[in-house]
Every structure is written in structure tokens, then in C-alpha cells.
Picture: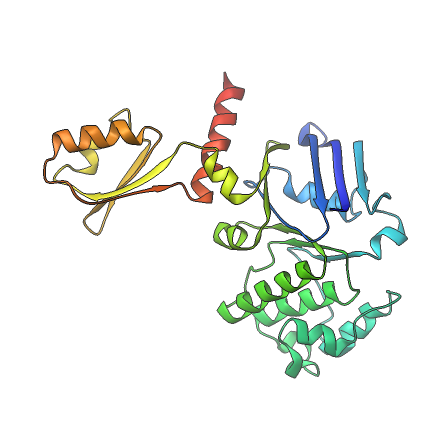
Length: 299
């Protein structure tokens, strides 16, 4: 697949604070890549470098084979950032007409509004929209130039259920058309549902880059749920128990030694019932990967 953007060996610092260190990642056409990491991990810096809001201090950032500050490269980019300020008094059609004038072959305002499910609101002023509608309008502005790369930073913040559903359909349609999508989000179920790849960033470094399924498979954590005469407090100090809590009469346990844990549970509670064992979800897998990296760095 065509590589549309990349960071190669990138380091970026704010005074004594290191935001990125030897960060490398490629984005390919027709893929949705979820960019995940805790606050302060370096996600926003990576995005600002890619869209040209920051200049690379060390390493290389390429957008369609050019520095992101080049106008020819930016014409293939659509961005929806976490904080966006737009004129409150302009209608959506006026906003889109203004944005479209920057591109050689844009969508019409009606086409852009149709893609985000706002066809009937073109004449409405931006200030008169709900929070979810404003976010969908921002997505329409990101799409109006027919981007080959769409960069989205916490795009569903403030969206209601209807807006989230429209957003997901829009992203899937963009991917089908060959657009690359970088989705930075704290909404892990959303990322898991949409992303072809997940890139985990921590302490400014890339910690993982793989499909959600393969990332889950890389960790040995299993989720156990059961009813037991034993309490969470009794099990909390068992070496096989990584995390545990009780909810609605069930024990919910995370373990990296599920077989040993099951043997001990069955030996100490003959009445154990309604047992379920599942693999880790994406959130648990990412937390485990990050914890392993942190413990290695501390050692």
C-alpha cells in the first residue's frame, strides 16, 4: 500500500521536556490507524508535526513525500483537531464555500454536508448548532478538499449517539475510497471498532504498532468472571491475580496465569459457578504493554 505520511526517527523537545524520542510510524492509503497513549505521551506533538503546525527538530516528517509545510502536500490533507474555532455568524454553506476555495477540486458544500448527515442544516449558523452537530460540521470542513489523508484528534468529543454513528459511517466510506485516516482518541471501543492498526505511544516512543487483534494476542492477560464463595478481598493477594473487583455478585479477575488461578479457585471453592474466561480487550492489552515497558525502563 502507498505510504502517504511518515515520521522517521523524530525527536522533539520543549525546553527540558522531551515530547518525542526516536518516534517512527508510517500511514498507508486505505487504512485507519488509531493513535493511542496517555496524556503527555506525545500524540499532540506528533499530529502538530504532521499537519505543519510545528517544524521537525530532529529526524524526518513527510507528508506525501514532502515536508508538511509545503502547500502542495497540505492540499492532500484534511484535519479535525481537538480545539477548533470557527466564525459563529457564518452558515455551514458559507463556511464550506470558504474552505473549498482553497482546493483545486473540492466537494460542493452540499456533498460535504451529505457525507456527515447534515444536509438539512446548510443554512444554519454555526453558533446555532448543537455540540455534536458542530463536530460533524468540522468533519465536513475536513472532508471538503477531498483529502488523501484525514487527521482526527479526539473527533467524537461532544458527539451524541446519532453523531457518533454518522461519524463512523463517514470514516468507513473515506477508507473505502482509499483515504488514509489517523484517529487519535481516548475512546478505545471506537478505535477498536474502526482501526485497521493501532499505534501505542508512551514517553514519546512507539510502543506497539499492529492490528487490534494481534495486540490483544501479544499479552497473556485473561479475563475471568465467576460466582464464588470467596471474596475479592480473600483473592486480592493471590500471586495469580493481577486485578480483581466484585460487581453484581460476580468476581471479575485479570490474570496472566489463568490456568494456575483456575486450579486454585476450584481447589478452594467446590461451588464455583458461572465461570467465563476470555482474552483481554484492547484497553487491558494496551495497559499491560505500557506497564511492561514502564517496568523495564524503571529497572
